[in-house]
Image (cartoon, rainbow, N blue to C red; front, side):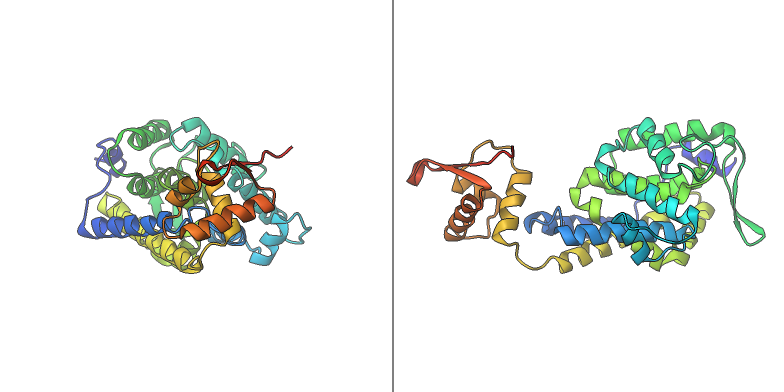
Length: 329
């Protein structure tokens, strides 16, 4: 039986103790992320991580531009370098700026992302391959992808797994990443699409993943990345690759938490509350329910400064005081 038939059998990985332990640790770290209000890291860190993500993912594919050059393109500064490398960066910036606009469970959204990511780089961007492909290591074939006639069916199976499996989304993102690389559905751009789509899936679990540069960990352990892909191919199951990526996710979350250990400022707390509340008007108690570690005096100062800066409108007095966010005109 050809190895690619395992996808039809819907058994993608074994639930090893390592996977269970890593998943538990990731859950603990996400709890810290939520408790310390860093689902959306500070602006300067978000920017730096986004640039690092794009640079790392493209460098894995052979892009020669430096982090400084990627930063310049990000800032619309003219860069001198290989034309294809510049196009790759511009395309990636366009895609990553709209990550929330992609539906991780929708085939059409997936193909739309590939079309934008590979526009001007390969013919047939946004379409599945119609020819046979293999991954070469030197002159030897490291991986022979399933036949082109079966790509649509295998990707349908994989998207069905995303939508219907009871596995948690973090596990699903790792499985999708590996299986997509195994199927190799596109003539080119498979690696960057695997990493991109894992991020988009992870964002459904927690918004913090939008700005978590897992790709930089892959770049730093690139040989292991390919070794885990190859080992999973040999095993006929994604287990080893899932273990590898889960460890990178854990490490990336830990690094983010360490980088954000500083307490949020009053301005950052008010803006965080604005982004994460559905209340049209709120009290100091509502505010403190989100920030349980601050005192009532700190909450009062935060809200007073918000009013002074023109971010908030205060109505009523004493126990009847309520606040609203000022609507920009």
